[in-house]
Amino acid sequence: MSSRMAGAALLRHLGPRLFAAEPVYTGLAASARGVMPPAAARILPARMASTSAPADADGKEGAAEKPAAAADQQSKKAVVSYWGIERPKLVKEDGTEWKWFSFRPWDTYKSDTSIDVKKHHEPKNLPDKVAYWTVKSLRVPSDIFFQRRHESHALLLETVAAVPGMVGGMLLHLRSLRRFEHSGGWIRALLEEAENERMHLMTFLEVTQPRWWERALVLAAQGVFFNAYFVGYLVSPKFAHRFVGYLEEEAVYSYTEYLKDLEAGKIENTPAPAIAIDYWRLPADATLKDVVTVVRADEAHHRDVNHFASDIHYQGMKLKETPAPLGYH
Image (cartoon, rainbow, N blue to C red; front, top):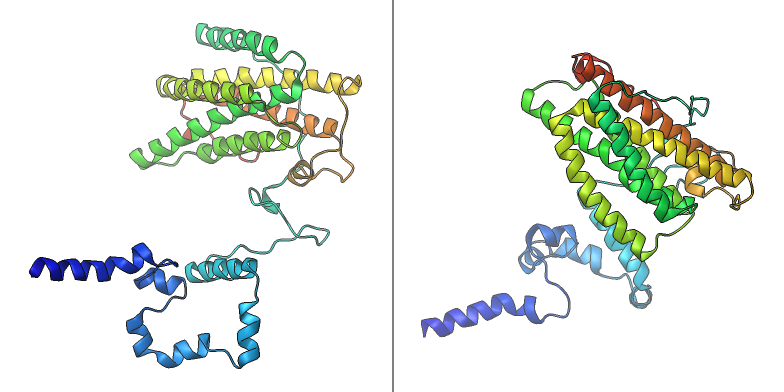
């Protein structure tokens, strides 16, 4: 008898959840979604009537004819209102609405294209030579695979180049927490670098789309490179930063070759993607050549920052003892 009563009670409790056409919410979830539990309905009948009861029959018909999109929008507004988080409405300088979610107007900037793109750090000691020739050896299969397909090469390059800043920033962040010390701004500087490289990738995705084998190559390369760089940074930060410095030198060279083909007419100089115009504050009539120029300048700045970080370690100092070049690009 007791087992039958327990089964009936369980069915009463789970039945609406398992067999109801609409999901059932209780407690806080119900309040967040505007669903009033029966107990609350008995306590607050006037409140329920004021929010759910229509004024007349015409209002009842109008509510029934609202499109599903409007209902979804109302549901989203209810969630936003409950948590108190709302996306501010931003506008550009010309008064048009800001449409990008991944970055805001205050994240945009004008790239310093006057930077010396031919600067090179001459390797003098053994770790520097190892870093330099490792990067040079990695370029050989890359050139064979991509040939002069600069757009696809840029996609792969940026998926790799965005890793070191994130790894270095993460490890410095954890060290700061463990040792209860400041980082001298280097956490933010390295994370800025990683985000800037990711924006390069988002830009070139508007120019071309990766093929399936290129996606597979990126998946493999990222898995190997992330773990290798993670271990390398733990073992020797000065070697890791020098390695990235040489990697950025090769990126500058790659974008220089890209520009040469654009200028020679081998690649169509199409209009710049809208995301690039907003991110780098380019003129409205900017072209792909303008985009590649500012991306190359960014890579040159990253080259300088990483060689600078490596030099700090070689001088027997710690990064936190030297102010980070925040916003250097």
